[in-house]
Every structure is written in C-alpha cells, then in structure tokens.
Image 1 (tube, rainbow, N blue to C red):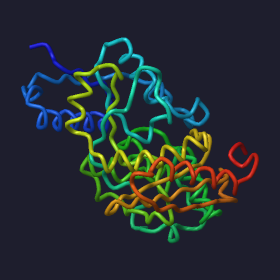
Image 2 (image 1 turned 60 degrees about the vertical axis):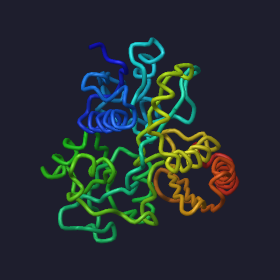
Image 3 (image 1 turned 180 degrees about the vertical axis):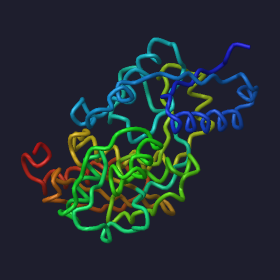
Image 4 (image 1 turned 30 degrees about the vertical axis):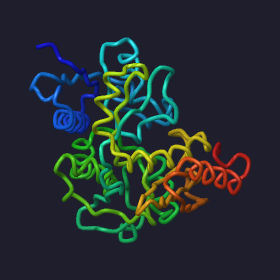
Length: 307
C-alpha cells in the first residue's frame, strides 16, 4: 500500500529511533495509521550531518539539522518531520508549525569519564570533548583549569573517541542515551552544575500548517505538559535571540499546574555566568519565559551575548 503519512528524519541511529517512537505512538493513537505500511520513515541528510570538522557555531548555528527536512516538507516530499527540539530555531519557516510533542525524557546531561562521576573530581587540566558552547561555558565556569576540545559526531563516535583516549571525558544528553539503551555509560549531572539546552530531551513533530489531516493525527499524540514547558523555554530563547554562538541554557518543569523555569547566559570562556529562575501558572508559560529572557538581557547588559 502507499503510505498514508511520510515522516522525515535525519539518518543517525538516534534520529531513526526517535522517528520510530513517533511512528509507534501514532499507530497506537490513530487507528487509520495502525497498518504496518501506513507510515513511511524518509531519511534526509542535513547540513549539520555533513559538517563534522568544526563546531556548528562556526557554520551558521541553529537550524543546520532541520533546513533540508523543512524544505522537503514545503515541497510535499514528506508530510511531517521528527526533530530533537533542542535543534529547533525559535521560529519556523512560513507555512510550517511544530504541532506535537512526545512526553519529554530526562533533560539532564551525563558525564562520561570512566570511573570519575563528578565534574569536580576530574583531574586538573583534564581534556574534555564537547562541541556545545553551553557545556563548554558551564564547565569552564566551574573548572577553568579544564582543557575543552571540539568533539563532533554521533553518540557512538563520541563514546569511541573517549574510550580511545582522544579525550578524558565528554558530556552527552541523557535522553538520547536512554533512547539508545545506553543510560548506564555515565553519570547524570545535577542541573545546578550543568543546566540543559533549551528543548533538550523533547521530541517534536513539525508539519505544514495547512495540512488538516496530518494536524488532526498529530493532535492524538501531543503531550501538553511538554509543549507548555518548551513554550516557556523557547519564549526565553527568542528574547535572547540565541544561536549556537551564544552559551544559553534553559529548562522548565511543570508540577501541579505550576511551571518552574531556570535559565542562564554565559560568556564562552565561562568567566561570567548569569542565572535566573521563574515560577508561575502554566497558562502564563510564554509570558514567564519572555520575562526571564528580558531579565537576563538587563543583567547581562549591552554586548554580553555578542562577546
């Protein structure tokens, strides 16, 4: 049979796993999509997948893992796309919309450093591999003695490089490790030591804003609490106009109708770090996020995010 829904995704093992989670959720929630061939997963290569020799912050920042997938959607080669929310810009191209979220996984980072389980216990001058300015800045803020080097590649590649001694330690998102069955390889880092990236741990589904059929199907799997938390985080990020060139972190948690948002901005070398917290009603998530972003801008002052 011809597929009723074509889901676009990157081709990494993690991306394919996440697309499978969306496919399975849709098949369970929407009887029309329950047939084995009703949903086709279409693999697309993005600019972010091609660039492996330098940090993404040097290649254009946010959007490098989604641009080609969004172009395929606008050209109607696919009907929807599965993304890691942390890769998403704060605004979508005209005609596209983020329409659903799966329930969020644990958003924390994981320290992978052999027998060492805490950042404070890393050897003086230890070589830590990461391509994320957010992680770099927070590591150097706590441990300015560490040597941070660029480490790109998929999860398996980065784990292999650490095992081979290319670096003594690295940090990865716990959500991705859990989805790949690798949660045992490291130790989660408390958020007061390493605040996650905005959107980390959340899987989002994007589609054409005028595609009523796909929108109706996606509504059947949308996890509203995750959508609310991400809305607060992205509202903060939008005020800051953040990109991969700016160390920005943010994570919101929703408990009994109350949202708790933590955010920070930092200098890339970790020499300065400004953190905020906000609590408020879930219905005020976006306003709360904007207010948090505006406070960070005020406290950072002119030029903080561009240096």
